[in-house]
Image (cartoon, rainbow, N blue to C red; front, side, top):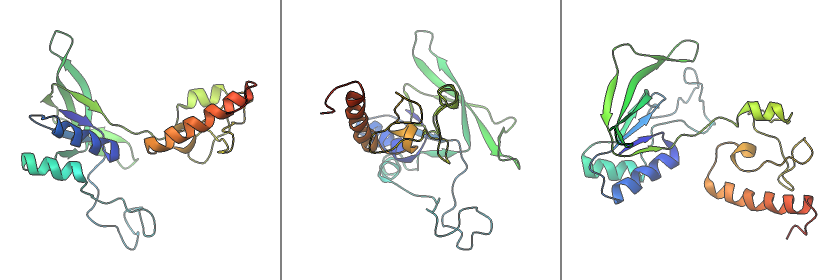
Length: 199
């Protein structure tokens, strides 16, 4: 099993794969490994206290994988380039390359670092920064400082008449329980907008 992406979703995918008896497991993370502790002075990391510390954390999935396979499954600074078919419509491998963050903050591929990782199953557990801006621009939606669609949590209406936003496109990357809650809230608002009772 190859899990692409980290965070809570990646950890859950690791844990579930282990419980289903996977024979091997690797977890690719695009970003470099975080430091073991937060920079208390904030001089170099851009992540000073009291901001949420971006540090190396070990969650239950990582612990379980380490116990079962003898090592943490995470591999950092890896860009997945291609899924390789077995010729019968199933994945057999993932082609990757190591990346470095350049001085301009962009990722650059490390020459000669290409690899092919065998895989029977690839799970995408990737987050995102904000909704697709093409849609936001086409609908002329007002956005917040993180480029999410701006909408009230009381009715989920955006700045465009008849357009509603909820979940990750409104609040940014978050947990599925928030998406479920906001999905229910926006359904009620859309029902009322269309002439229903709004439950």
